[in-house]
Image (cartoon, rainbow, N blue to C red; front, top):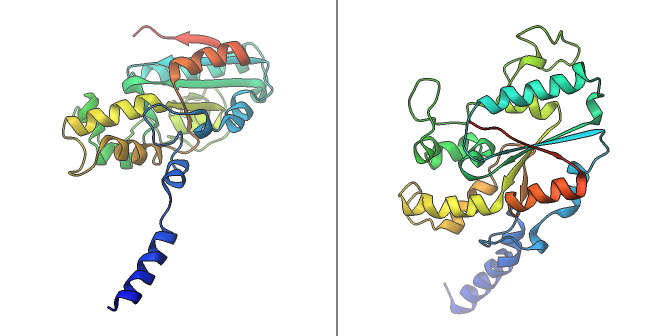
Length: 236
C-alpha cells in the first residue's frame, strides 16, 4: 500500500474510533475507579427512585443470601394486600454492594468471570454457580392471580418478577470497580484484561433495568434523606 493511501486509511480509522470520553460515556458510571458526577445519570435516578409513592422501602445487602428475595416478596404482598397500599404507590429499591452486587450480573458475566467460584456462591446442584439462578421468572406474570396460590406471581421470588412488580435494582459502581481489580488479580479474568476493562465489561452486561449508582453506602443516605426510603437490612 502506498504511504499516502496508508495515511488516508489510518486517518479514517482514527476518525471512526471512539474517544476516551465517548468510551467512558458508554459505560454506566464511566470508566474511572471513582465515579464522577458528569458520568452519573442523575435525571434517570431521580425519575425512577423519586417517582410518586405513598410508601418507600430500601433493602441494603452486602453478602448474597437468597432469603432476601422471599422477604422482599413478603414486603410487597404485605404492603399491598395487608395494609392496602395501591401497587403503583409502593416504591421498592434493592441496594446491593459487596459480593451481593453479583445479583445484578447477567449470565454472561457469571460465566465469563466465574462469579460463583470467585464469590464462593453455590448453585442448586451444590457446585459453584455458573449463572444468575435468581433472575428468571418461574411463573407467567399475572397480577390478577390469587395471591394465596403458591405458583402465582405473588409467590414468585425471582428477581425478574419482583422487578415487574416495581422493585428497582441498584448496582454500586465502586463495588464493581474494586471487584474487577480483584478478579484480575486472582486470575478470574481472561489473559490481557485489566481491572478497568473488566469493570466496563460487567457494567455493560448487567441484568435489564439495573441502575448504576456512584457508591451504594452514599446512595443509602441519598434515598433516605431526599426521598424518604425506609431502611431495611436483614441479619443473616
